[in-house]
Length: 161
Image (tube, rainbow, N blue to C red; front, side, top):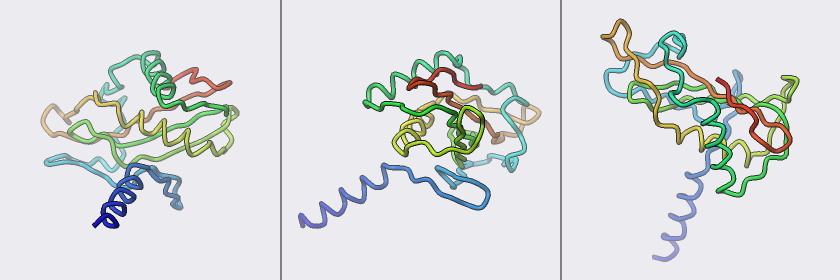
């Protein structure tokens, strides 16, 4: 009995950690597209700016909250560059199908520490106020959004957009 309990706890701990999936078209944190009921999928062709659907908090507020999130988890940033998550927001305001992009400050490909990526991803998933949009105010639809964290000298110095 204890053996099964330990196995269950171990498997649960693995599920709590996100993995980076490498595919021919890039790296992903999540390759599952969760649309929800009656949600029209635009196949990634509708972007947040077409529907005035930028996250409703200022970039400065998100930057402050992200820094607090990392500090609470004792995550120290040591690298410089950009970590960007591009994802789909479904008709329930949930994010899925998350693509990961990592660059240095000169926009050249770079790999950040897994701990940094995992923590920023967890923070990004915690953002729950994504705008729900409808095509012509009738048809609920998903849209593509992104969030980039600019890291410089161990600090998140900007969040884009």
